[in-house]
Image (cartoon, rainbow, N blue to C red; front, side):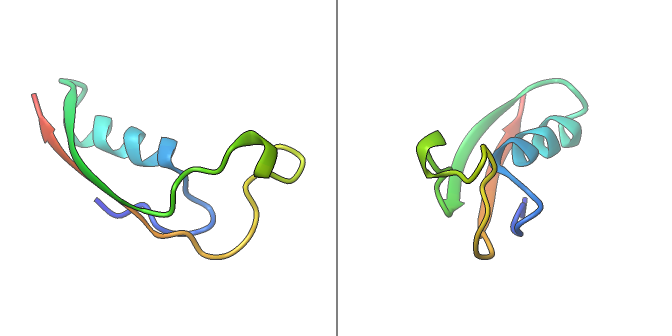
Length: 61
């Protein structure tokens, strides 16, 4: 599933995966995209900057 964009996050990818699997759980098969920044790299605790590319492939349990 695609979770790209400045307004999205890796956490939102995992929320989408959980919703897609109807709460039965999932196993992450692969991820691709911009890595999550360290807290020290954020501005006032927020990840700001360029467009972020993220996708995650999961298998529902």
